[in-house]
Image (cartoon, one colour):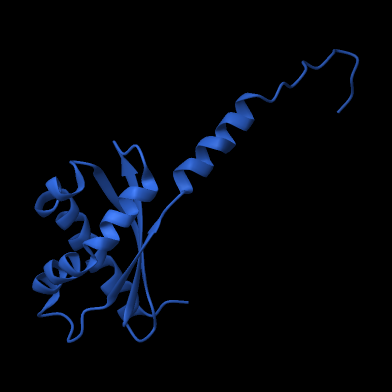
Length: 124
């Protein structure tokens, strides 16, 4: 269960990172559309787990590695935005959010289900 301060910082980090990925570092990541789907902070606010989804990306693993390579720069840009909010900027851990992929697989499964029509003499 996250506390109020954790949630507030997580929302702020999510907004700021989304802005950083969309505006300041878009060319660094080959104009990929990177969405920050969720941020979860540890209770001591020292680590932020950042969940990302990608569009216009051929290899998700390579993109995640590229983001990790630029982790220090991303954290510096985040620090400029959060400097008046927190004393210590959380360490950023990036993860791929596969929720959309799972949802697509479930939808495909439901599309393939064939339900035979009910005959008039069947009872409930």
